[in-house]
Amino acid sequence: MMTSEPDSLPRNGWTTTSADMPAAVGGTPLIRLSRASDATGCDIFGKAEFMNPGGSVKDRAALAIIEDAEKRGVLKPGGTIVEGTAGNTGIGITLVANARGYKSVIVMPETQSQEKIDFLRMIGADLRLVPAKPYRDQGNYVHVSRRLSEENGWLWANQFDNVANREGHRLTTGPEIWEQMGGKVDAFTCACGTGGTLAGIGFGLNDAAEAAGVARPKIVLADPEGSGLYGWVKSGDLSVSGSSITEGIGQSRVTANLEGAIIDDAERIADPEALEQIYSLLIHEGLSVGGSSGINVAAAIRVARTLGPGHRIATILCDGGARYQSKLFNPEFLRSKDLPVPAWLDR
Image (cartoon, rainbow, N blue to C red; front, side, top):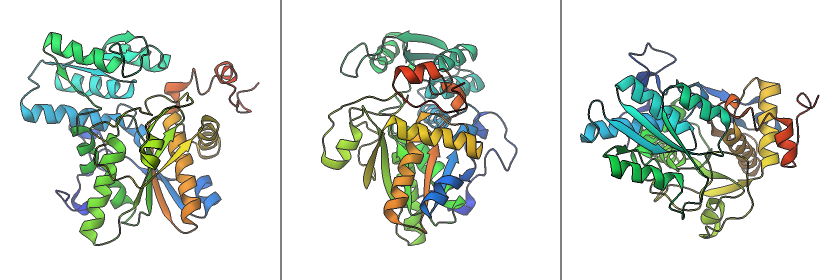
């Protein structure tokens, strides 16, 4: 059950002053997506997580993990936090660490966008780039970060298997969505990397529905090609096929954050379908978002069409498009992947 009723939530960020950067994490707007809503006869809302101080939904996981470590006494003043990340969690950890007086060491695959690499260096992270390798390889960025923790006595954030990640979303993001939608939520869609966002929000929405004595929303995992989670939900098969240009989502294993999660269904979204939503949101609604947001919105549209007109669906707008300018908004890169180039870029 929730520790507080939805109407007693701390209203961070947009309706109050904040004591510092970590206190401003959360409290993000929930925006009705007009074209997706009009196309389906439903109300589809995107939680604007790109409006967190560090620019992504991962600010919440970073803060939850650090605060949990502080409470357990395993992160001491002046300590160092190390994490393996596709970028956004590293940004969140570095900024929260800066605000709290910690040092951060970030291990990231060298294939991630140059914008995230440059930003991490700019904000003071000790960035270690490694070759992109599958999780089964000990050179994988997650394993490298774990070894650095063991060798140096640093705190390993371990976002994939540290359930403080999903607990942070259970206590904040889920109840926020419930309150902002007045308790009228029929479905929620979200992609997974760690699984913390989907699982935590699913638990939070379930808690709120139980407290209100109403049916809980349908929880739908949105998955890119090249990930095994769609098959895991549908048939227990984690086999991977295909690929995607999206970053930070998709998985070939069941993380601790996903264990026991409430998941009713899954949608697999190909890159062209995701890009269509990314470009539509930008040009028609003034919302600049990244690849995972396109996956999430495309899945929300599919779910809305399955449920039928009159339903209300929420999803996550994970981060902003500026972090992917060299890929999602680069005609040369898009053509190299045989992906559509939007008209305004094709000049």
